[in-house]
Image (cartoon, rainbow, N blue to C red):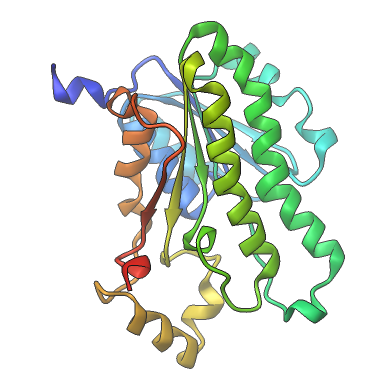
Length: 254
């Protein structure tokens, strides 16, 4: 057994949703460093920074602009990617957002949108890619959960519900597809220094509460998630199915 070879992703195509910035960008770059060509799916904004990181590794980059909250825009996107890239070997369902309202005030429109982006899109893209992976007898699907896959949080009912749903979806798909060669697992990040939780970083009271709860005493940096993503995307994790893997500085250990 050659351990370094287990982590190689040469000649594989990885689709990463929400790869324009934050954890998605870090994951896309890590997969490219391990040898994968990258497809980014995002709703808006400039993905040139991610593209440059990927191309610096000598890998191909394809940018797809669709709104993952709209099922009609998701329709056929995996077939489109296969026509341009040849196939899909790895799917990382990372895209998401969050809104903070007391439950009694949470706008139903935002609830529906958030559930659709986190949960609906993750299932839809997994369903689209499954026949391709089943035909090849192998494939890796990595869902992005959260420590809120285990907890309820504060004033984030839609986000907590969606991330609990991602954990359940991961286990359900693993039960269905593990015997067909598809590994479905979930990364559950804690508090990372990205744009999405930025409002908490700038709230002195909340920021202190969070920091006091993290045993290692700091927020995570985006590039610290890349190694775990490569592991779950590679042959090194071939016997892992339906796992929810936390990477949280010890948050859930408290």
